[in-house]
Structures are given as structure tokens and as C-alpha cells.
Length: 307
Image (tube, rainbow, N blue to C red; front, top):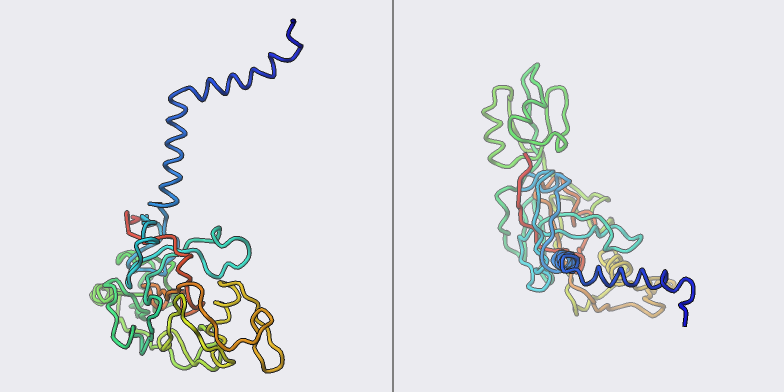
């Protein structure tokens, strides 16, 4: 029987695909792509630092190796972590920007910052050697502020410059180095914050906290039972309504969750508290609260420092 017109043309693409699939180089290419995707999803990935919130530990342009397996093996206080921006509520959270900070407190810990000193579970926490605080650098007349910064490796985007002074995050080593600079008159730490600040978590006059005096605050962990009332609701409303997707409302003086009376709440996920190493130049958990552990991408290790 004669072949119907067009039959050869219909079968031809299929034959081409079969020949491509049988090609060993093509199959090796697909395998390599699959391995790369698996490595990126479950083992390792590379990210570049874009902000100055971890200065002087990390600087913009530094390359980080992100260890994905830490999501299964666990994290420790002091770990640098890469995570998804917890403030991005619109759209899928896994598409939000990546940030890097350091874990200051784990689920179940109690955190406090007192006069700029970090306390965890009542004891002073071990801090990184690269911890930086805001200092005021007074310059000699006619000194070039940008030249002073570049000589000491301080990124210009981290500072606020005036005609005769610079405010910049400095480690103790950088402070000592600047004090010996010929263009510098003096280097002094900026005064610590005082009084309550409404831009500090949990954004309530009931909690007179600031970036240098904060807490004490218990970090929620899975299966914790929280007693919820009008006083402490600002601490947990985002956790309940955004991260764990329940509907909060009220009926008169009665708090409601999913339409039912709310007095106690059982936490469904683990949370931590993160801080930037550039303590006065970092938007971190002091400004937006608890970080869900399930938004952490992995543990960060500095791989290459930008020139």
C-alpha cells in the first residue's frame, strides 16, 4: 500500500529526537545539568554579597559558598546564614531576595542586648572578631574623607561623611589603624541608643526597646505553647498570620484565630534571631523580628574576598 502523503514528514522529527537521545554526548550533557541542579538545590550554591550589613566580616562583592546540607544537620549560634527576605510577603517567598546575617539565638533561646552587649540565656555571647560598631572619625582640615576610607579598606557606601567628620562602622583593629592616620584627629564610639524606638520590633510602645537595648525575648520553637494577650500580641502577630498562615481578628476585647477564641497558641515552626556583624548598619531581627528556620537557604562560608 502506498504511504499516505505527509507520513514521512510526521515521523521525521521523532526519528531526529531518537537519534539525539542515543547520542552519548547529549546524554552526558543532560546528566551534567541534572547534577548541577541537584547540587544547587541540596548541597552547595554560590552567592555574592551585596550589602554592608556584615562589614567587616564580609564586604560587597565577596563570594560565599552556601552549604545547603546544614538544613538537615542543623545550625549553631554564630553561624553565618543565607536566607530569603522574611519581609517579602507578596508572591512565593522562595523567590524573594537572599540576605546574609549571623545567628544570634536559636529556637528556645532567650536573647537580650544590654548596652550593646549580646546576652543569650543570661550569659554574654561569644561575638565574632569582625564585629563593628558606629564610630565618629574627626578629620584634620582639608583632609579627603574618601581617601582616608580607601586607605583603611572601608567601603564608602558604609559611611556618612561631613565636612570634617565621618560616621563609619569600625572594628577595634580598624579604630586603632585610623587613630594613627595622619589625617585623623580622633576616633570615638558613637553614643548608644536610648529609649524606645517605634521602628524597632515589635513596633509597640509596650516594648521600649532600641538597637542597643533589646529584650529579653524568648525565641519560639516548634511545639511551644504561647499564651497570647493584647500585651504580647505584637511579638507574635506576624508569626501567626504571615509565617504560619492563620487569620487573626477580634470580637470586642476577644482575640480570635480563624474565627475561634485565642488564648494559647501552639507554634508550628522553628525560629531564630539573626544579627549583622556591622551592628549599627544592619537591618536584622531587631527590625523585623523572628526568622523562620525554613527560610534559611544554608550556612555561609566566605570563599573569595573582593579586591
